Length: 68
Image 1 (tube, rainbow, N blue to C red):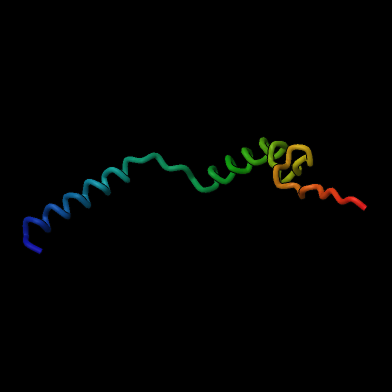
Image 2 (cartoon, helix red, strand yellow):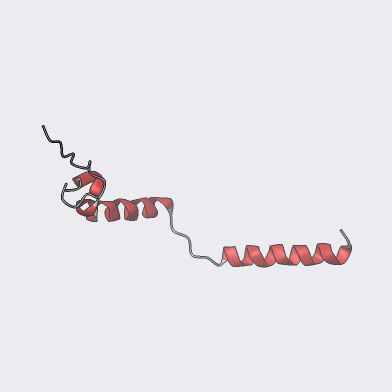
């Protein structure tokens, strides 16, 4: 690597670090609390928790018609 390309690469790294340093960060504890609150507020709409009615379930087993 030549000297000028090394300097350009380092300038790019410095610009990226300056960009990342300017970002607002959220504490993990706050993010976890927000996520928990969101999950609790939307639990009533979660089909994994409430189940899916058989009339609206597109994956229900198909009824078999058999004649005796």
